[in-house]
Structures are given as structure tokens and as C-alpha cells.
Image (cartoon, rainbow, N blue to C red; front, side, top):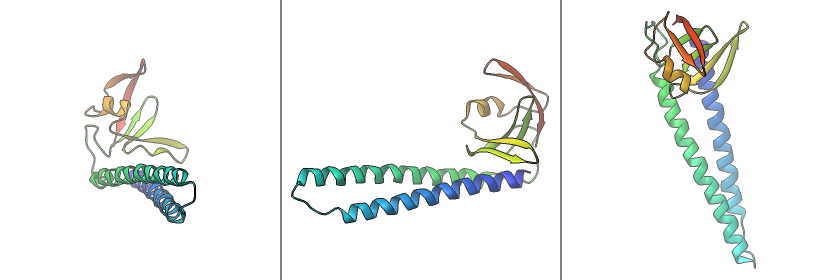
Length: 147
């Protein structure tokens, strides 16, 4: 299942990257098609807005590169007793895959939440082992499995 989870995360990142690149291309077209009109201030404001959007997209594309770097670090072969990046964890409340924040993955009616190691629950889980307990949002949970 870890292989399918990792592929799910990669697909999520690649789809997001493609959407951002498409938006960037559309903004570039928009910037190129802006023609100087007699209302010069309006034209300059429009260009400035497009450039701000391009900067935001640039930051989001950098985040995608960082996320890809995290996914490259994940080793799904072999298991670890302690919860770490790439661990598949079953608690008494849910299943988690510690990788990136990519949403819910459903396979054979089992829902696994793909979460970043920076997520609050992931911070509680990191370094723990099967059989340990932790409290999240006032609810005590048991770690049932670590793969």
C-alpha cells in the first residue's frame, strides 16, 4: 500500500504543478496582450496586478520543488519501528501516511490521510512506536501499527 500512497502523493504534486504552469502561461499571455491605452494609469495597474499574480505563482512553484524534494527522500522499502517520514501509521482513530499534505487516499475501503510531517498530528506521532499512546484534540489514541 505504501507504493500506491507514494504514487498518489506524486500524482497530487504533478497535477498541482501542471495547473500552476498553465496559470503562469495564461498570465504571461495576459501581460503580453495588455496594450497601452489612453488610460495609462489603468494600464499600469493591470500590469502590476498581473505581475503580482506571477510572483505568487513563482512562490507556489518553488513550494512544489520543495515538496518534490521531500517525496524523493521517502524510502518505502523496509520498515522502521519508530514513526518517521514515509511511515504508514494506523491509530485507533485513523490511518496516516507521513509524507506531504495530499488529502485522503482510499483503497479497499481504507482511508489513509497523507499528511506532512509539519502537521500537528504528525509532530505528535514522529518518533513513537507501535503500542504507544498520544493525545490529539483532547482524544487519547493508540498506535496500532507502524509500517
